[in-house]
Length: 89
Length: 168
Length: 114
Image (cartoon, rainbow over all chains, first blue to last red; front, side, top):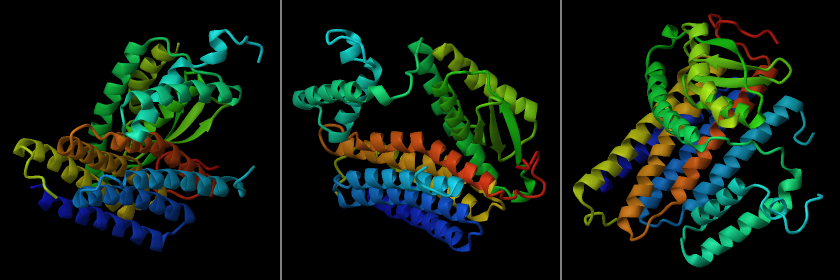
């Protein structure tokens, strides 16, 4: 049952990532693009976790954690840049 | 730094934070052996001792039991309001009535305000956008704002009052 | 992939978490793609996507805990991290949008004129 469901869930998350790419492409403002990138990061975490189950590894969690960290820090840094025009005040 | 080498304040400036760090270490290494527990506890003592000089004032949790209830209420509300938001997204966008409103804060603890703002962002179809420290207000955007006063009353009663009890 | 040794009802729970999470995350991204202004788009990712990925992570946690002897808890760490950071990044992006004076849809109530 799980072997059937994981490809379905992966397809759903891939569709979500494609929708995020669509928003990333059309914008219209740069803040929309940051939001699209942030969501893309979150969806890619789910894809990594699913492929982890699919391959039966359980070693990819460090990767998921790193992507979560990088996504958060880069989103805040870019928003801060837009707020102040400078990353470091 | 005037506390002496023997006092609790020097070695364990924040016991809860130390416990949290130890637990975080165990989750991170995914290994609940005695050695890792001891290492985690050592880190939990060492990191606050080194860094507590540049941490902001610690929030005081007065009552742990309402905190537990708050977390449970929050989890249920996250699930419920996420389903509501998902249904609203699926409906045509012209049926939505988005709106901003100012939420007047009655909390005064910084940490409690942070928790409240995060709660507002995670739950009832609202996102907190701006905190005005001078006027003590939060600017909130709601995906579907039917009744401003009603939404404010809900947030105040459901989230702010318990937080006030916990951090008073 | 050798999930045959798991009882069917445990498999059902894992499957339910995975499918529910994927559907909710897809709805969140759908909202990001179709809603008309930035402030409304902010709601999709902060709520739906976080819950969706959280459910997927919990499904994975259950799967690995049942599959191997001993629990696997790193997913819980990622889930906690996501739920703690999603409101903060939404707050920062919202502040940036206010600073850039992005307009909401015309029917937005009490649009701030800052």
